[in-house]
Image (cartoon, rainbow, N blue to C red):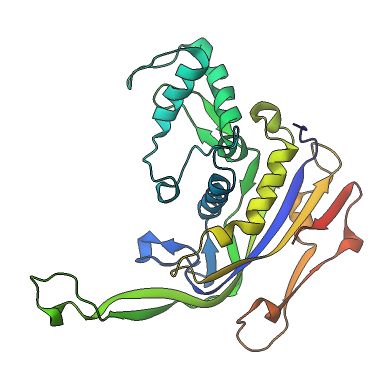
Length: 294
């Protein structure tokens, strides 16, 4: 596999229509919002979950592209991280470790390398593997910010009703009618910023092939993650700044400022066509290329 030799920064733009892109458990699962500005938020953890889910489905059974932090919804199995670490030590080093056992100190680095080799999400996003049998810690090559909406969003709660009863030993009238609520936002355009190190892959094995799989996931992951609660979520733009060196040629924030997003309507935005996205390529610093993958 080809080594990653260039630092990369990227801007990922996606939208949601009539859905809840990321519920806040501290607020009754309402869409996450910056309380001071009203801007919508989607956590990096939420986005990484969707990347993992895509790879778990698209690369199922493919050696080296397994997912450590699996979704039970997709796998149907309960997967325990410490159990995967013990399994790795048994298969790679012949160590039969119990639940409370620790791997020998001299084996930890090899265990860490083996976990990176096995699991796409470990070498991409990193992982804390120092619990249980202990395979160290991995700092991933790819880091992402919270996504923030371009404009303020207003969450709307909808009352839900049902017309079917479930339990025969309960009165029918008590089981139909108003049964719950559902929160959505009419429309939101979200912007996430990401950073890909060319130095960390030297320790994790994150490669150019892994990078292409990561781009593929960002392009397609919403189509593998449909639910009534999330409404219509779509990837709209993926803008990639590639430096010609491992250490970079310009600060990431200066590059992100080159991506301009403007409203094209005076009305409340309700679709991506209500915005215009442009890149100020004339101001691109020397030693960088920019490419729109979406």
